[in-house]
Amino acid sequence: MSGFSPAFERLGAALAAVVLQQQETLAEFLPREDWSADLTARTYASGGVAVRVSLLGSYAARERTWLWGWANPQFGDAHPAVAPTLVIRALGERLGITEFTTPEVDLSWYDGPAGHGGELVAMAAGGVLSGAGYIGAGYDGGSAYLHVDDPQAPPAGWDPIPVPRLLASAASLFPHEPRLTLAGLLSHHRVPYRQTDTLTELALPEGGTARAHFDGLGRFVDWEAELRPAALSG
Image (tube, rainbow, N blue to C red):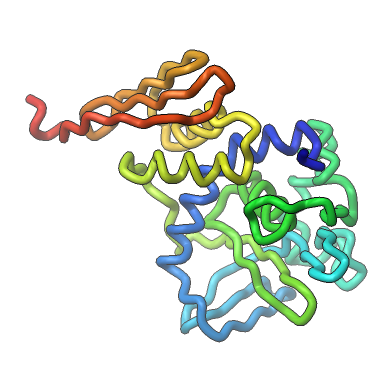
């Protein structure tokens, strides 16, 4: 049973597929080689590529806790790398998402498919900020999570091919409501759709149609697509 709050689970479900797709796009753009970071200057550099970042928080492996950047005494909410992330806390206060307002979040209960519960907090936080994705920067004892906010890093574009894979992967991490996960991805890319309890139908921008099927418990079970390039449909 999840130890996350229902509000966090719902938000995570709505954002998960969008975040996973953006992470794949960021991985293609930003080499994961020897890296350096200057948080006062809000820069992260790896493999000859430097991007602007902000500090989401950090995960301590031994304690199994997430510490927000604004709660870290080394930084605080006035730090240049932290200030851009405070909208996450404000959203948490407005929507009752305790994970976003608790300075240090206990994740010792987590035993799901992600490496640790902090990864899911970083996913949800990064999704709130949108942008180009997040980076897990490992250090002795844990990982700092940086959000990439840089116009040179490309946004993920619409592609129907990986949708079922993204949906399945997202639902494994945030299983609250796969229909909401798909709706979040489609809305993000402004793809129109119709949804019932067991079926989501969409008209593909490139031509053709697709249908996602869900069972009586709301779980994703099947995807079928008829791709018809718009340029050839007439």
